Image 1 (cartoon, helix red, strand yellow):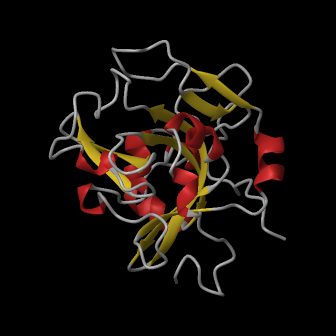
Image 2: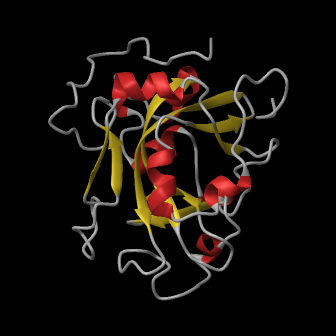
Image 3: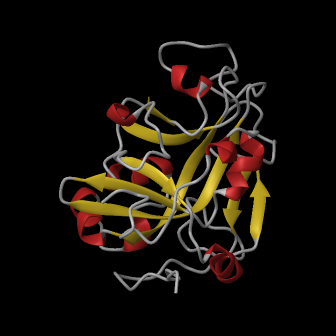
Length: 227
């Protein structure tokens, strides 16, 4: 099913949404969908945690210029940037800024919403909150790897995409507020407030003071439908 088909209740973003600083795009992605189309169905969730990586940022892969590994970061905007880390994990990013400027938003955590039966095959954990509460975990749950690097996240036929949540405002009211803080797991520019998250979400990669305890066992998610 195409992301923009009449049977799909959510719509994609406009290209201009990503032609901005990653520091602006990162909080604006909170509460929207990351969707993965597989041969046996669609899975994905609502974004609850992001990090921005800027072109003049020492922690960014683009800081020292374009390479074969980071080429996707240099655009065009609205593409995927998928990299391999620690010899074992993948991380998924949305590319920002006009072409030639290397910036991206790392998707750190999701609330799993769609295709839970598919995700449990990829992340055989007993608790849904543990499937996608970290960048490597969500890539495993959604089967994201380097084969998905440099794809158009706005194309209806893409195997991976970002889509607007029509009830985002209500979702943010129930899971917010949007908070900022230092990024996680980096050694340079650690104090920059470029991590953005929903303060009341139990699906964060690192729970904060106002986050509720993760639910025990599997449960119905707190998705707010378009209706």
